[in-house]
Length: 310
Image 1 (cartoon, rainbow, N blue to C red):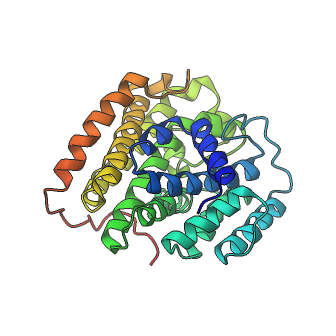
Image 2 (cartoon, rainbow, N blue to C red):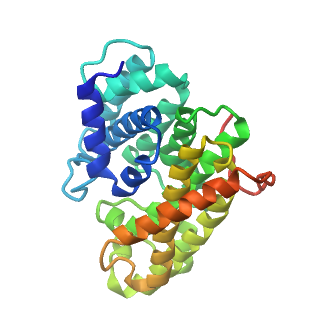
């Protein structure tokens, strides 16, 4: 039985940290929602610790000193949670419950932390493949774990869940590129930026490069689209309410990417998001997508898409 304090902290974390995911999570059946929000809370906590922020906010003011020490502490606590050892922090108690309840291998949480190591060690991303490796660790692996929470072990369905996580992260990178550049992080492929004459993180912040940055961000949004399309094939393998939730989240995030592309040079004048009305529309549309996906045989996954480690 999940401790009430653990669940309440996890629920608050998702409510403040991601309105889009919180809206989609309401569609899960209660037991699935409980595990999903506890897993999200652990992911959110690790991100916050590494970046010295609170629930994904105030990144620019975050204290990122001693990053390797913080990461080592997260890895230690995560290993203990996965081994079922007592955890003082409710975030790790929640992770322990999720891992035990759904049989999630330790490899996946530790691989997620490896993505934060790429941040701490100031990894450079020269090509799209480099960026996709980062996307796998910080988001694709979360998609795989969420699919396990929803009850699937089908390798193809896990591949499609990974694809959706990758698409979400590519969208996030395009939307947050200026915000990330403020703290010296650049996830856009350097070879793409070089073609547009952007050579340093500082130049990403220069208004004179905004048109060029808009073109690179649009290229990344386009790169996400095959992963969004591939993900639909996995939705039909999920329980109907889970499929509805995931189809809704897919619609919301894909719309954010489309808005980034449509706004071009002005995509970073204000933070792009979806309105409450937009979300209600995608909830309704998600139901239709979920039902339709259950009635078709999915096509093979395209070979050219980045493939997660076995």
